[in-house]
Length: 445
Image (tube, rainbow, N blue to C red; front, side, top):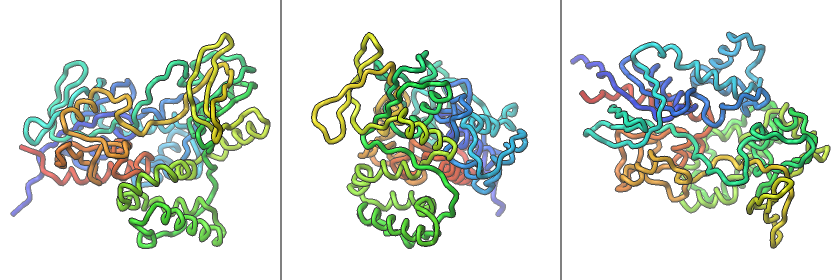
């Protein structure tokens, strides 16, 4: 008996940032029968929070060779750069704005055809109806019916706090005034880079609970590590001791801690999946901040600027917890609780930039789409407040414990099940796999 080709499947991809564009791209490549509707409220796709910057000095924190949209073709992005007459190698770090343009270009082959539809709107409500299908309502009251919906909504948007600024470029600052930054991660690095490039000479004070800065990229070779070597399911403390031994192995072999971290990367999702709930919570409390600064590193060029600013005393790193900001005739007072001290301290600065990064809890600042999914029982937040409860394939688990066959989450929205699913190498693998799976499933007739 001859197998019948699957009927044309219609998939909604909700969110047009990096995750959404990669999902649409792989769906369109995987099966010529698939139609994709990509919903994004911004006028441009592919940018999201990460790639919306126009500053050429805001660099990717990953080398070009690791940023291809195709898992099987690591040089895809590199060739795109060469075609754009960029003199780069796979080891180069290019601007995030450049990568945003690359993501935009991925869907160009289908832009004028019938298989891809781009809708600039906000998704408001998603339901599993009619049976076996989905219905999406948009903020312009348009209704879309499809066979499948994939949530590519990215990181939770942080709430605006009165007195805090989102971006130093929105301000007109005297070059000699003091500026404070909340957070000491990669977002802080971007803001400091912009300040220094603009000729700012005044003090820059960065505040975070631990005062940890992202480490620096350096050449290396990932330490060969098999999943069988990893103590899966062991307590977080045992895993940490094991990783320290891996670091020593790498150093004995003439490498560095980077090789141990990079060798472990393919197995992080499996490690997270095997951890019991209490151990996941313990890992978040005691190891997550350490992991993030070693895992997400600065390009060497950027790190040199930060090091020079620290060495000169212009950039100061403080450990403490943000309390509040209050207006002052000469700017604002930033009040914080210093680490290991009682009481509060205060800094008089011209402005406070909020670089505390993405929030973990998806309900913080939740939009109408997520709010309705939760209220309707079609989704639930995991106990650690990392993201939606899903299976390892990203299929949503309802409040009643049923796994949906038509609703999936990808990228940061699926972090609860996978943890390491916020970087391009992980998202491209996830989206390619989901596209391949859907291409093999006949669409409802």
